[in-house]
Image (cartoon, rainbow, N blue to C red; front, side, top):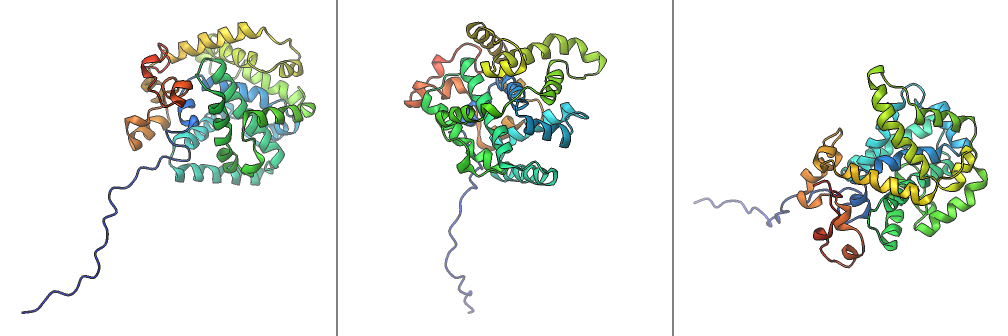
Amino acid sequence: MRQDADPGPAVPDPGPAVPDPGLFGPGSVTWQLHGDPVMWIAGVRALWLQALHPVAVRGIMINSTFREDPWGRLLRTASFVGTLSYGTAAAAEAAGARVRKIHRLLGVDDPGLLLWVHCAEVDSYLSVARRSGVPMTDAQADRYVDEHRVSARLVGLDPDAAPASVAALDAYFEEIRPRLAGGPDARTVEDFLRRPPVKPVLVPAREVIWRRVAALAYDTLPPYAHALYGTPAPDDDTVTHRLVATANLLRCVPARLRWRLPPRHILRAMDRLGPGARPDPYANLGPRAEAGEDTRAHTRKGASGR
Protein backbone atom coordinates (compact mmCIF):
# COMPACT_ATOMS: atom_id res chain seq x y z
CA MET A 1 0.00 0.00 0.00
CA ARG A 2 1.52 3.38 -1.08
CA GLN A 3 2.13 5.90 1.66
CA ASP A 4 1.52 9.61 1.09
CA ALA A 5 4.58 11.77 0.51
CA ASP A 6 5.93 13.69 3.46
CA PRO A 7 4.23 17.12 3.34
CA GLY A 8 7.15 18.73 5.15
CA PRO A 9 6.97 20.95 8.23
CA ALA A 10 3.63 22.52 9.01
CA VAL A 11 3.25 26.14 7.96
CA PRO A 12 1.95 28.24 10.84
CA ASP A 13 -1.42 29.83 10.30
CA PRO A 14 -0.76 33.58 9.97
CA GLY A 15 -4.26 34.33 11.29
CA PRO A 16 -6.45 37.15 10.09
CA ALA A 17 -4.80 40.12 8.46
CA VAL A 18 -4.24 43.03 10.82
CA PRO A 19 -6.07 46.16 9.60
CA ASP A 20 -3.75 48.94 8.53
CA PRO A 21 -4.07 51.91 10.94
CA GLY A 22 -2.20 54.22 8.59
CA LEU A 23 0.61 56.56 9.53
CA PHE A 24 -1.03 57.85 12.73
CA GLY A 25 -3.73 55.47 13.96
CA PRO A 26 -6.58 55.97 16.46
CA GLY A 27 -4.18 56.36 19.38
CA SER A 28 -2.67 59.52 17.93
CA VAL A 29 -3.66 63.11 18.66
CA THR A 30 -3.87 63.72 14.91
CA TRP A 31 -6.51 61.01 14.45
CA GLN A 32 -8.73 62.54 17.12
CA LEU A 33 -8.18 66.19 16.28
CA HIS A 34 -8.63 66.05 12.52
CA GLY A 35 -12.13 64.64 12.88
CA ASP A 36 -13.41 67.89 14.40
CA PRO A 37 -15.19 70.29 12.01
CA VAL A 38 -13.27 73.28 13.36
CA MET A 39 -10.46 72.04 11.11
CA TRP A 40 -12.32 73.72 8.23
CA ILE A 41 -11.71 77.09 9.87
CA ALA A 42 -8.15 76.13 10.73
CA GLY A 43 -7.43 75.24 7.11
CA VAL A 44 -8.54 78.68 5.92
CA ARG A 45 -6.43 80.29 8.65
CA ALA A 46 -3.42 78.37 7.31
CA LEU A 47 -3.98 79.92 3.86
CA TRP A 48 -4.07 83.42 5.34
CA LEU A 49 -0.81 82.75 7.17
CA GLN A 50 1.01 80.99 4.32
CA ALA A 51 0.36 83.93 1.98
CA LEU A 52 2.57 86.17 4.14
CA HIS A 53 5.78 84.48 2.98
CA PRO A 54 6.62 86.41 -0.23
CA VAL A 55 8.69 83.67 -1.86
CA ALA A 56 6.33 80.86 -0.95
CA VAL A 57 3.20 82.66 -2.14
CA ARG A 58 4.96 83.74 -5.35
CA GLY A 59 5.63 80.07 -6.10
CA ILE A 60 1.98 79.27 -5.52
CA MET A 61 0.81 82.06 -7.79
CA ILE A 62 3.19 81.12 -10.62
CA ASN A 63 3.21 77.34 -10.51
CA SER A 64 -0.16 76.17 -9.21
CA THR A 65 -3.72 76.17 -10.50
CA PHE A 66 -4.72 78.58 -7.77
CA ARG A 67 -5.99 81.23 -10.19
CA GLU A 68 -7.64 78.89 -12.72
CA ASP A 69 -9.09 76.32 -10.33
CA PRO A 70 -8.96 77.66 -6.76
CA TRP A 71 -11.74 75.44 -5.40
CA GLY A 72 -10.22 72.36 -6.97
CA ARG A 73 -6.88 73.14 -5.41
CA LEU A 74 -8.45 73.61 -1.98
CA LEU A 75 -10.35 70.33 -2.25
CA ARG A 76 -7.22 68.47 -3.39
CA THR A 77 -5.33 69.86 -0.41
CA ALA A 78 -8.11 68.78 1.95
CA SER A 79 -8.12 65.31 0.39
CA PHE A 80 -4.35 65.06 0.83
CA VAL A 81 -4.61 65.93 4.53
CA GLY A 82 -7.45 63.41 4.92
CA THR A 83 -5.44 60.66 3.25
CA LEU A 84 -2.43 61.32 5.47
CA SER A 85 -4.61 61.37 8.58
CA TYR A 86 -6.94 58.41 7.97
CA GLY A 87 -5.81 56.49 4.89
CA THR A 88 -3.73 53.34 4.86
CA ALA A 89 0.03 53.70 5.09
CA ALA A 90 0.33 52.74 1.43
CA ALA A 91 -2.23 55.36 0.37
CA ALA A 92 -0.50 58.05 2.43
CA GLU A 93 2.93 57.18 1.06
CA ALA A 94 1.56 57.22 -2.50
CA ALA A 95 -0.06 60.61 -1.93
CA GLY A 96 3.20 61.95 -0.55
CA ALA A 97 5.14 60.62 -3.54
CA ARG A 98 2.76 62.43 -5.92
CA VAL A 99 3.17 65.70 -4.02
CA ARG A 100 6.98 65.40 -3.97
CA LYS A 101 7.00 64.73 -7.73
CA ILE A 102 4.86 67.81 -8.38
CA HIS A 103 7.14 69.91 -6.17
CA ARG A 104 10.20 68.75 -8.12
CA LEU A 105 8.61 69.34 -11.53
CA LEU A 106 7.49 72.85 -10.57
CA GLY A 107 10.72 73.72 -8.82
CA VAL A 108 9.02 74.48 -5.50
CA ASP A 109 10.84 71.88 -3.44
CA ASP A 110 13.08 74.30 -1.55
CA PRO A 111 13.27 72.97 2.03
CA GLY A 112 12.86 76.42 3.56
CA LEU A 113 9.62 77.06 1.70
CA LEU A 114 8.27 73.60 2.42
CA LEU A 115 9.04 74.12 6.10
CA TRP A 116 7.09 77.40 6.11
CA VAL A 117 4.01 75.79 4.59
CA HIS A 118 4.27 72.86 6.99
CA CYS A 119 4.62 75.02 10.10
CA ALA A 120 1.81 77.36 9.07
CA GLU A 121 -0.53 74.39 8.71
CA VAL A 122 0.44 72.70 11.97
CA ASP A 123 0.23 75.96 13.91
CA SER A 124 -3.18 76.78 12.42
CA TYR A 125 -4.67 73.36 13.10
CA LEU A 126 -3.39 73.29 16.66
CA SER A 127 -4.09 76.87 17.70
CA VAL A 128 -7.61 77.02 16.26
CA ALA A 129 -8.54 73.66 17.76
CA ARG A 130 -7.36 74.56 21.26
CA ARG A 131 -8.87 78.03 21.11
CA SER A 132 -12.22 76.62 19.97
CA GLY A 133 -12.52 74.45 23.07
CA VAL A 134 -11.00 71.10 22.07
CA PRO A 135 -9.55 69.75 25.33
CA MET A 136 -5.82 69.22 24.95
CA THR A 137 -3.06 69.10 27.48
CA ASP A 138 0.29 70.70 26.75
CA ALA A 139 1.79 67.23 26.40
CA GLN A 140 -0.85 66.29 23.81
CA ALA A 141 -0.15 69.51 21.92
CA ASP A 142 3.55 68.62 21.83
CA ARG A 143 2.66 65.13 20.61
CA TYR A 144 0.59 66.62 17.80
CA VAL A 145 3.47 68.79 16.59
CA ASP A 146 5.86 65.83 16.83
CA GLU A 147 3.47 63.52 14.96
CA HIS A 148 3.46 65.87 12.01
CA ARG A 149 7.11 65.39 11.34
CA VAL A 150 5.72 62.38 9.46
CA SER A 151 3.72 64.79 7.30
CA ALA A 152 6.87 66.85 6.79
CA ARG A 153 8.66 63.80 5.43
CA LEU A 154 5.86 63.05 3.00
CA VAL A 155 6.05 66.47 1.37
CA GLY A 156 9.81 66.24 0.96
CA LEU A 157 11.26 67.64 4.19
CA ASP A 158 13.83 66.09 6.47
CA PRO A 159 11.61 65.26 9.48
CA ASP A 160 14.46 66.20 11.83
CA ALA A 161 14.26 69.75 10.44
CA ALA A 162 10.61 70.14 11.43
CA PRO A 163 9.61 71.32 14.93
CA ALA A 164 8.96 68.52 17.41
CA SER A 165 7.20 70.55 20.11
CA VAL A 166 5.07 73.65 20.58
CA ALA A 167 8.10 75.52 21.94
CA ALA A 168 10.11 74.64 18.84
CA LEU A 169 7.21 75.72 16.62
CA ASP A 170 6.97 79.05 18.43
CA ALA A 171 10.73 79.53 18.08
CA TYR A 172 10.47 78.91 14.34
CA PHE A 173 7.87 81.67 13.93
CA GLU A 174 9.96 84.09 15.97
CA GLU A 175 12.93 83.40 13.70
CA ILE A 176 11.07 83.76 10.40
CA ARG A 177 8.89 86.78 11.18
CA PRO A 178 11.33 89.36 9.75
CA ARG A 179 11.04 87.64 6.34
CA LEU A 180 7.25 87.89 6.17
CA ALA A 181 5.35 90.62 4.34
CA GLY A 182 1.87 91.48 3.12
CA GLY A 183 2.89 92.02 -0.51
CA PRO A 184 0.86 92.02 -3.76
CA ASP A 185 0.57 88.24 -3.92
CA ALA A 186 -0.70 88.13 -0.35
CA ARG A 187 -3.33 90.70 -1.36
CA THR A 188 -4.38 88.47 -4.26
CA VAL A 189 -4.88 85.58 -1.85
CA GLU A 190 -6.75 87.91 0.49
CA ASP A 191 -9.12 88.95 -2.33
CA PHE A 192 -9.81 85.32 -3.13
CA LEU A 193 -10.42 84.32 0.48
CA ARG A 194 -12.79 87.20 1.12
CA ARG A 195 -14.72 86.88 -2.14
CA PRO A 196 -13.90 83.66 -4.02
CA PRO A 197 -15.36 83.20 -7.51
CA VAL A 198 -18.53 81.10 -7.50
CA LYS A 199 -21.44 80.40 -9.82
CA PRO A 200 -24.21 83.03 -9.58
CA VAL A 201 -26.54 80.60 -7.82
CA LEU A 202 -23.97 80.21 -5.01
CA VAL A 203 -23.37 83.91 -4.40
CA PRO A 204 -25.88 84.08 -1.47
CA ALA A 205 -24.18 81.11 0.23
CA ARG A 206 -20.80 82.77 -0.25
CA GLU A 207 -22.02 85.96 1.35
CA VAL A 208 -23.81 84.28 4.26
CA ILE A 209 -21.47 81.37 5.05
CA TRP A 210 -18.07 81.54 3.38
CA ARG A 211 -17.29 85.19 4.06
CA ARG A 212 -18.06 84.74 7.75
CA VAL A 213 -15.88 81.64 7.98
CA ALA A 214 -13.02 83.35 6.11
CA ALA A 215 -13.32 86.46 8.28
CA LEU A 216 -13.29 84.39 11.47
CA ALA A 217 -10.25 82.45 10.26
CA TYR A 218 -8.53 85.77 9.54
CA ASP A 219 -9.37 87.12 12.99
CA THR A 220 -7.66 84.12 14.64
CA LEU A 221 -4.30 85.09 13.12
CA PRO A 222 -1.58 86.35 15.47
CA PRO A 223 -1.21 90.14 15.89
CA TYR A 224 1.90 90.36 13.68
CA ALA A 225 -0.06 88.82 10.79
CA HIS A 226 -2.81 91.43 11.15
CA ALA A 227 -0.16 94.14 11.10
CA LEU A 228 1.32 92.75 7.87
CA TYR A 229 -2.13 92.73 6.27
CA GLY A 230 -2.59 96.32 7.42
CA THR A 231 -5.42 95.88 9.91
CA PRO A 232 -5.53 96.19 13.70
CA ALA A 233 -5.69 92.95 15.63
CA PRO A 234 -9.19 92.31 17.02
CA ASP A 235 -9.90 91.75 20.68
CA ASP A 236 -8.73 88.27 21.71
CA ASP A 237 -11.67 87.49 23.96
CA THR A 238 -14.21 88.53 21.33
CA VAL A 239 -12.56 86.36 18.67
CA THR A 240 -12.35 83.38 21.00
CA HIS A 241 -16.03 83.73 21.92
CA ARG A 242 -17.02 83.81 18.24
CA LEU A 243 -14.76 80.87 17.43
CA VAL A 244 -16.15 78.71 20.23
CA ALA A 245 -19.74 79.55 19.26
CA THR A 246 -19.11 78.80 15.57
CA ALA A 247 -17.22 75.60 16.31
CA ASN A 248 -19.95 74.31 18.62
CA LEU A 249 -22.55 75.10 15.98
CA LEU A 250 -20.57 73.06 13.44
CA ARG A 251 -20.27 70.23 15.97
CA CYS A 252 -24.06 70.05 16.19
CA VAL A 253 -24.09 68.65 12.65
CA PRO A 254 -24.08 64.84 13.13
CA ALA A 255 -20.57 63.53 12.60
CA ARG A 256 -21.61 60.76 10.24
CA LEU A 257 -23.39 63.30 8.08
CA ARG A 258 -20.29 65.50 7.95
CA TRP A 259 -18.05 62.54 7.24
CA ARG A 260 -20.22 61.40 4.31
CA LEU A 261 -18.91 64.26 2.21
CA PRO A 262 -16.43 62.97 -0.40
CA PRO A 263 -13.90 61.46 -0.13
CA ARG A 264 -15.20 59.93 3.15
CA HIS A 265 -11.75 59.30 4.67
CA ILE A 266 -12.99 58.86 8.24
CA LEU A 267 -15.84 56.50 7.40
CA ARG A 268 -13.49 54.39 5.32
CA ALA A 269 -11.04 54.26 8.22
CA MET A 270 -13.82 53.13 10.57
CA ASP A 271 -14.90 50.47 8.08
CA ARG A 272 -11.29 49.26 8.00
CA LEU A 273 -10.57 49.37 11.72
CA GLY A 274 -13.98 49.05 13.35
CA PRO A 275 -16.28 51.49 15.22
CA GLY A 276 -13.75 51.87 18.03
CA ALA A 277 -11.62 53.93 15.65
CA ARG A 278 -14.20 56.73 15.61
CA PRO A 279 -12.46 60.09 16.20
CA ASP A 280 -13.85 61.97 19.18
CA PRO A 281 -11.49 64.59 20.60
CA TYR A 282 -13.80 65.46 23.49
CA ALA A 283 -13.73 61.86 24.69
CA ASN A 284 -10.19 60.92 23.76
CA LEU A 285 -8.17 64.05 24.47
CA GLY A 286 -7.72 66.20 27.56
CA PRO A 287 -6.42 65.49 31.08
CA ARG A 288 -8.82 62.63 31.83
CA ALA A 289 -8.01 60.81 28.61
CA GLU A 290 -4.30 61.34 29.20
CA ALA A 291 -4.71 59.75 32.62
CA GLY A 292 -6.50 56.78 31.05
CA GLU A 293 -9.97 57.68 32.30
CA ASP A 294 -13.17 57.25 30.27
CA THR A 295 -14.39 60.78 29.61
CA ARG A 296 -17.32 60.03 27.31
CA ALA A 297 -19.79 60.90 30.03
CA HIS A 298 -18.14 64.32 30.30
CA THR A 299 -18.26 65.17 26.60
CA ARG A 300 -19.63 68.65 25.97
CA LYS A 301 -23.09 68.63 24.44
CA GLY A 302 -22.90 68.74 20.67
CA ALA A 303 -19.14 68.39 20.59
CA SER A 304 -18.91 64.91 19.09
CA GLY A 305 -21.73 65.30 16.61
CA ARG A 306 -23.78 62.47 18.10
